[in-house]
Structure formats: C-alpha cells, structure tokens
Image (tube, rainbow, N blue to C red; front, side, top):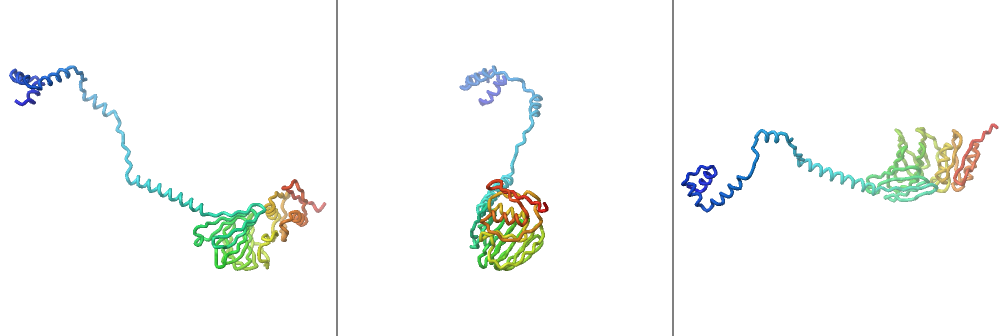
Length: 304
C-alpha cells in the first residue's frame, strides 16, 4: 500500500493492526505523529454557515470609480486648450500699445505705418502693434490729431462714432457726449449712430447728444491746439471749463446753472487769466480764486 493511503487511513483511524505496524516503521511516521499531536491542542470555533453569510451580506459593496479613457483624454485636451488660450490672451495684451497725454501735456508718436499722431491733454489711444497691416484700428478717448502716411488707411473708434481715413490729416475730439471731426487734407468718412458722412479739406462736423452742429468751413491747416491756442466752435460753457481743467490741471467750478449760450472763439492757451476774463465778460461771471489750483465762477445778476 502506498504511503499516502496509510496517512489518510491513519488520520481517520482506519488502519488495521498490520497496516499500523507497517506505517510506524516508515521514516516519516515520527513527523506525522508530531503534527497530529500539535494540532490536537488547537481550538477552533465551530463553523456556523448562517452567521458567516449574514456577516458577508451586512457589508455594503463599495463601488469602484472608473474614469473612462476618453474622459481622461478630454481633460488633458481641455487643459491644453486653456493653456493655449491663456498664452494667446497674454500675447495679445503684450502686443497692445497705449499712448497717453496727462493734464496740460501733449504726446507725439508714430504708428507702425509711420503715420503721425499727437494726443491732446488727458487723452488716450489704444491699438495693436501685431498684425497692424490687416487690422488698422485705434481706440481714442479724448482728442488727437492724425497725419496719415500717404496711401495708408485705418479706423479711429470712439465711444460716439467711427472715423475712416485714407492718406489724410484730420482731428478727432470725443468728450462729454460731443464728437468733433475736422479734415485738413484728403477725405474722412464719419459714422455717427446710423449716419455716414464724408468731409473733405476745410470741412468739420460736430454732434452733441445726438444732434448735429453746423460748423463753418475753415482754411486752417492744423488744429489750433497744436499751436498753443484753444479754439471753441459753438461750445457750451461747461464743456469749455472741462477743457480748461484738462489743459491747466486746475479745478474750475461753475457755481450756478450753466448758461445755454454757445461760445465761439480762439484764445491763447498759455494765459489762463486772460481766458477766464474773456469767459467772465461773455457770460457775466465773477472770478473767485480760492487757491492756486481752485477757481470758482459765479453768475452776476446784471439786473441789479
């Protein structure tokens, strides 16, 4: 009989006396006997199938979250797109040029096509330097004089209207709901609300609060402020005071309700006192200087 059969029968106490004698004479019997002796001292709880089953069922199954490969791919692509967009915005901002003239100052500069621009006091221009040949557009706040290079064109956009030019010299002023455009050479197209008007050399066009203002033709070759003069054409007194505050970096206050009378005239820009006396005479005002930088204008009752 094979040894393994002796072992199985010995464990189950099924060996005959003869088989037991033969099994004890094997070399492995002493080892098996020791194992059986040690195992007899081990205590194991009775196996209760019902208890084990209830224990297993009482534990909730935890769902394993699986992220599909296509979602991982989408997240990576989205991250690349966001990064690319950020770089694009950064590059666009980096290529954006801003020119500014502060109170009482003028700023001159050239555009990428060599056109010349002069900014008047407290004015600002923004434009993109990259791809200028395909996108010739500027944003203007305030007043600027343009001397466009021959054969070049671009668009000047303001909050009140759009001006399209071609090889010309012109002036644009956009302040306080009033748009003024003057042409000194060539031709200028002005888009204001739903209107489109072309003006040529010596002509000017003005709009205020949506209403056109008729401006007489002139033979001057450049705007007056380029030669240190302040010129006003059918201008309200409050607009004039705002312009003086910008040019002289002072605070001039009109104490009473502004007059509806419109002012037309040219005055030297380097003499504020002379300008104040001209306005005081035209509008019956009293000049009250509070300090070096603050002036109050009060209406005089001429009937008294």
